[in-house]
Length: 226
Image (cartoon, rainbow, N blue to C red; front, side, top):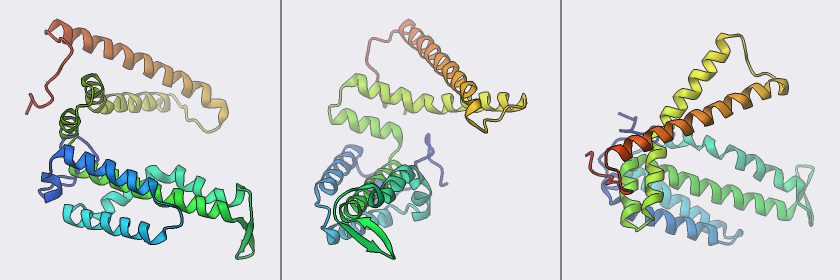
């Protein structure tokens, strides 16, 4: 039940958020993101209100909070950088628990962490309540260039295929006793990545030739397979 129909990020449900038009949700996400980014760093109360608003949307969507929190791991690199900023930034210093930290770094790190978390959480909520092909239809309604929509559609369709190919290559390496433990093994991993790129490129050419042979003229109807 918790797995999506066609994508791992989607959470199947019938809430008002799930039923909302995809292009409206895309516009809402864009507007929310722009407002969060434009908010000054020291407006702490505003960030609290944004979080409450986002929490209300999550509650209405019936998506379990743990479902979203597990996927916040994608934000880890930004969290690490935000935690480092008070130590590496210049400017006036302040002592916190006996440690000298940069005031500008503290404020910048807080802003990066708050804005990044709100943006990622909002994006995950959209992905959890909207199926990928509905997002493509929403982008079409918003008049995004047709070719970009098609590229995104193919990415969604074939990301699992490429992921399975990568997993099979990893299993093949491990079955031969190879495990990347130190930088000496990086050349092997790099060659595997190059081989995966070539295979993916060749697969794309074969798919394109198959589409052309079946009358493809440069446009697709995203909802035709419903």
